[in-house]
Image (cartoon, rainbow, N blue to C red):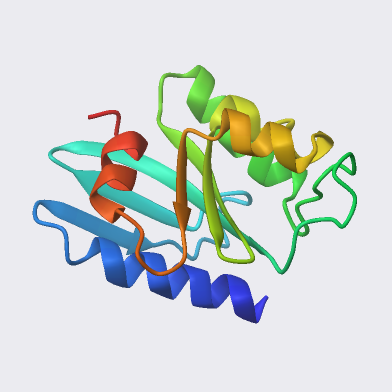
Length: 141
């Protein structure tokens, strides 16, 4: 999980540099499944679960499995999404960054890399990501 904590730190640090954006890391033992961070931009809140995978599968047809993405986390995103909230799954694989809405978060780990790249709501690569565009997608602005 060390890589996930690195991802959390990287995203939080980048977002705190964007004007009119607040980001809070969430550590919540009272409500199982609560996403890793809450982002507020221009008055709109969004919740984001962060995951890290070290590498893509070697075979193109192999589904990409998201380790440690619990059913409670999926359920939290589903219930909040169905109620009109903004919930996202943000995944780093190698140096690729991909963002999935709460609907895709329910089934993304049953699909191969090609589908991931096709359905991601936002994509970034390496350390030079456009974090403002990420915030705008996450908050629907």
